[in-house]
Amino acid sequence: MISAARTHIGKVRSSNQDAILVCPGKYGVYGVADGMGGHQAGDVASKIAVAVVERVLKNEQPSVNLLRAAIEEANQIIYEEQLANPDYSGMGTTMTVIWEDEERILLGHVGDSRAYRVRNNAISQVSLDHSMVAEMVRRGLITEDEARVHPYRNIITRALGTSPTVNVDVKELDKAPGDMFLLCSDGLSEYVQSVQMNEILRKYSLENAADVLLNMALEGGGRDNISVILAEVEA
Image (cartoon, rainbow, N blue to C red; front, side, top):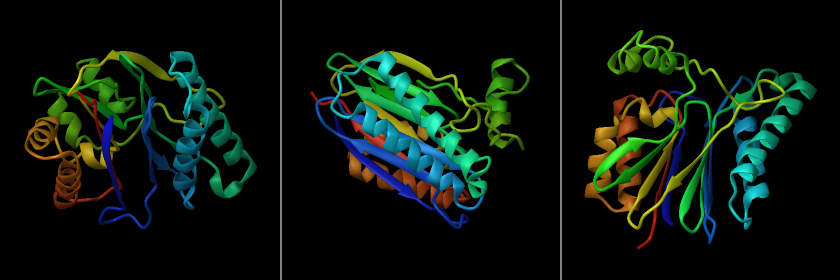
């Protein structure tokens, strides 16, 4: 895959607690982690997550079990670190990863960072948000429009590092030439809706689209860190 990636502190936060993983190659690995916790702990958690996943998966033959194991190992290391260091108490991070194989894309996911796939000019979210409002939407308690402005929209129900074990969503996706995958933290998805993402990806090259998406999130408010990775399956 060819790719473009951006991460930005945003307009309000004092530090960037997002971390991105771009590891191209025959079995390319791409990921976004959105950290949480005070005393820069979120920054520590997200960096640990991407470092562990890259170390475990780089140059390996893609497999569902190994992807899950990599994310579980990241969880364990973050959890042990926050137990050992009082400054890191309560830290955690989301983690959304895609891993390219010859005929498929593996997706590993925890939290509310997102993965989208664009195919035949149509965009679909292929990850499932682990958040309070997403669960409320799935249960029919609120609409998606209400979820976007709900006061609890940033409360996640699953993260790496907050408990000794974690339930990792892993799925296999078929791939086709021209498929594009968009990974992002909620600093992007809160301000740029999927229909807008699709329009931008149809209009611009990967590098320019990454810039336009980032600028849209900043212009929309930029109240969170913003990260985006675009990865396209080559023909």
